[in-house]
Image 1 (cartoon, rainbow, N blue to C red):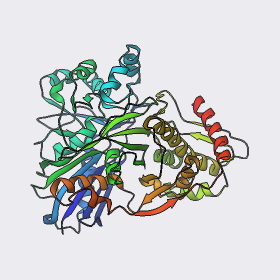
Image 2: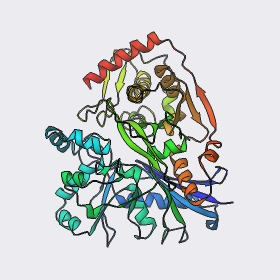
Image 3: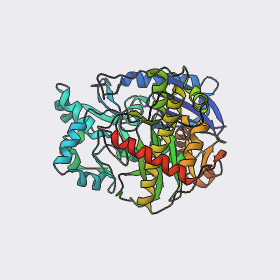
Image 4: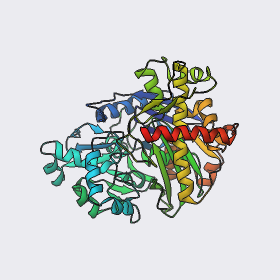
Length: 490
């Protein structure tokens, strides 16, 4: 029996799954790590914390696994989070700047004022927003003494988290990233599938620091010096977390869509081999490229805060001690009592793109309780997604059919039912909701022959539960009006 390791390096922790050829989970490990908030709107990680969390999770997942049976490793990761490190010592030049970080909002505004956004979007499919890697890299190069000089001389490596982990897993032998992660940097031409000289010059990023761009599936390197792993295991899958989830949900046909509920909420729709330009505030991104040459694009909309809003209820307001308690608390009232929560704690993403927006609670009365706030927070998570999906329908020219869901918060039945109600479509939740890790495993397994093709993978996807709309559209229209008014004030 061959096994595939999936490393899912997320925003708040790292998960490692070991799957067999029949997609049974044979090992699992998870390790949280620190979140660093130097000042409001800034979010950082220590790259050593990231690496330690991965090795600790690997150790937990491999306790009962014979290392000789491991055929491949797949990596999926928090995407736009940016790391610069010394190629000789491996030491990070600065803490990783996380995708949620907003410190470059002013720089993005300057570029917009200079009329640069249309060209950037034409080349990258992205909007000018501090969410993406390019301005984060520029900030580090300008803010760390001596770093820009070292970067120009070729002594510094840049990478999103996948590239950093690949470098560590291979003992510093491989400095590469895949097309999906490259497409999130503001530096990559998604049509030519190459780093753009024009964009690198615009953002002052030397091409010498950029990793080699490789397919999402296919051997990229082999392990060397990794605690608990033998040398020589193929690393054969790389994909940003949301593209990996699209692949893991077997959304292989144009029009297939999924929503991942993690720290944020991320919706992708497969648009086939054509990059569909958005006029509704969405992103155009690379979905995957296989070693066979198959290339797929996607439309994407992201809400920066989803599960993180529940963490805020737990840690910031102290409404409960465990995130899993939110559903019971929210169910203790029949509705939100007119309370609307806009969870814009890190600004508003697609289709609004308002980095200056902040979270808000409106509609409070003397009768409002913590249960109403909890329920309104769950509703706010779902209503953000409605804004994104309606924009996606306009851009793609397709009506949304069944939406596949995954991620931790998809286990919340109340949230999923409300999502179905306000969308007016059915929601399908798979048996294995960790689709991000599953996609990394699929890509690695395809790249090493563990699985032969996508048809074989599609047969393994199994639905666990389906949610069907239960409310009338008049109620939805009224609730949406309250939401739209609250968003305008956020």
